[in-house]
Image (cartoon, rainbow, N blue to C red; front, side, top):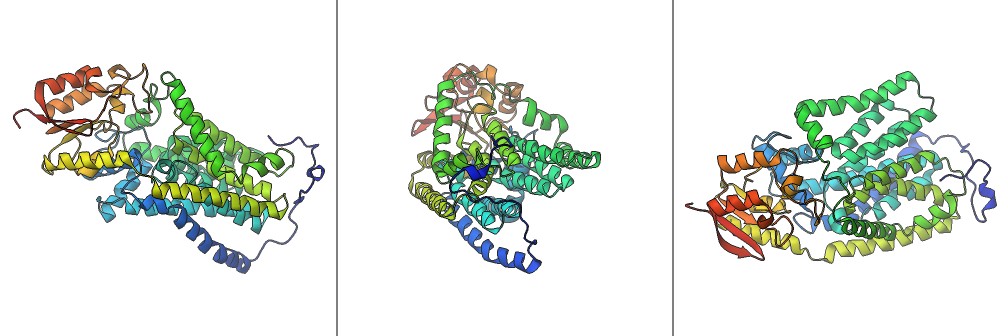
Length: 497
């Protein structure tokens, strides 16, 4: 929390009291020179921190899900009808557009776009900090952000998925609100929401800035229009009822805390510890200074608080959720360091750089056994099917469809949508009755209308195994015969094929 008005930064030894900025605003030439010196540094740092993302064809099942969705959309699929997920449409459209322009055999264009998204986020943070606290604070904010941006499991930090593309939208919302451009701020909040639902949490600090600035009716209307029109357009471009169901109302069982409480809490604590290690250079000055000195950072604390609430929402605590905390943390770090003696800034940057190096080494050197398994499984299926044969991978790795280059037999690309296992649950809330509402009748029709040539049971003893899913067990017992095993996965071929 910010200190009460009576607190004075002069009472803290070693603090540099910033005071109001009285020097004239820098001219256009000075601004150009500032950015000409800083942008190459930020670009080089962004490339270095994203280097592990190019190490593997893909990093996470989310990337695989998006890649398969993009192929289905290219083949005439309809989002929220024959192509479904619990996410808004912006990132699937981004993948589909990249595949249309550059082909669907590689995620390299998306990796480059993710790099650009991180660089844009850093640039916006520089501009926010520089406007408030000067040139040095701007440089510090941008560099700190890029250094901590890799501070999670590489599968979470290096994947080109929803959160990475959401971050520049949240930063843009704060940038526009800071300059009282309310229509643009609302549009940026809408883009953040359309990248991932929790991106809409940035509306809280944006609303605070609007209220603090007087909240004129015209400004409120501009913010509302900027927010509402893009979301309405996205709903109309897909299907309004499907958009509402898949992005808001259809995830009740998934968002429940019941089942595997200890498992998800341990995951949350581990990811929080990883982020704290990455922020080792930021947290001490923030704790020491911002709880004492007044820095005009109330909206930054609100940004951080709303981001924490977004991480907690859904009770799953996946590592990539924590990416949303990094922009406000970088700005709060810059706010603290511009008050402390300058040597503390050097120490903070060195500590953050060392932590960044550790996470980069992790990303470059760590093996990917699940990706290796999915690749071998895809090779086995590809050898036994034709290019147009539909297949069903019953598991949690939709990237196997993309690696095998075979069309999925169902719109439900993971067993999680049909059993609620998605989210890592291994307790009582896994099974047919916890599936997405209405999913099983649709799935059965898909299996009857155009049965897959091959079904791969990749459950490997997990709670969504066919012997615990009666409908799938009946489908396999009547129409399929096991023909092979691949590292615990069972390959079934349609009888009579």
